[in-house]
Amino acid sequence: EDQVTQSPEALRLQEGESSSLNCSYTVSGLRGLFWYRQDPGKGPEFLFTLYSAGEEKEKERLKATLTKKESFLHITAPKPEDSATYLCAVQPSGYSTLTFGKGTMLLVSP
Amino acid sequence: SQTIHQWPATLVQPVGSPLSLECTVEGTSNPNLYWYRQAAGRGLQLLFYSVGIGQISSEVPQNLSASRPQDRQFILSSKKLLLSDSGFYLCAWRTSGADEKLFFGSGTQLSVL
Image 1 (spheres, rainbow over the protein chains, first blue to last red):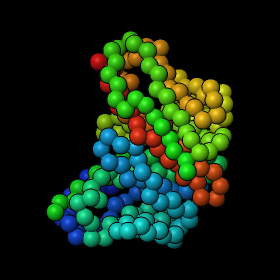
Image 2 (cartoon, rainbow over the protein chains, first blue to last red):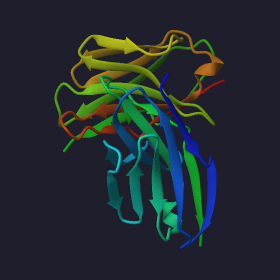
Image 3 (tube, rainbow over the protein chains, first blue to last red):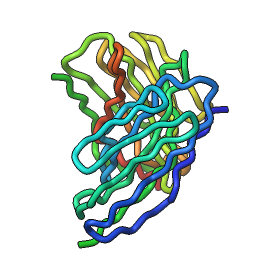
Image 4 (cartoon, chains in turn purple, orange):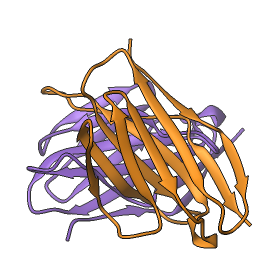
């Protein structure tokens, strides 16, 4: 069974304090790993897709990396507006559906 | 550009009442469409997906059903709501090609009382 585990469940940072979120996954074959940002009461907003181990993608203060077993979302010098829940999802090979983790709730204080 | 519309944004329904949530996509044809549910403290749970008109796949046996009467329209329904049907319902569509992405609507917060 495909599984996605995100840690920590919640993370509190001071503005400017860099950190990383973890997404561990178990899947028979990986077609893609996805990161989303979700604000309260809103639908998830797409951030990145990673396809193979060693791949990295960046967007503003966010950088996503991928290994064969996990992905990291690095947040550099975060700002209060980065506060949100970050979701990780995997798409197994041969499937058109995604399996999501429970998310990491990030709070950045000024 | 492609957009996805989902309504209503908020819904309060009594137990035993029917449900109909609608989702439409603009700017693309023959999209793969999805219904997810997000309950408090839980991850996104895939409920149904559709690869074309009249084609529905169910992921979890439950009190809900889905229909796709038109290419860009996806409907989530129930004949009699249960308390456990409360949650945040999200419609999504998936792009095709080498760089696939799943885009979500704004969601419907359903409270069954």
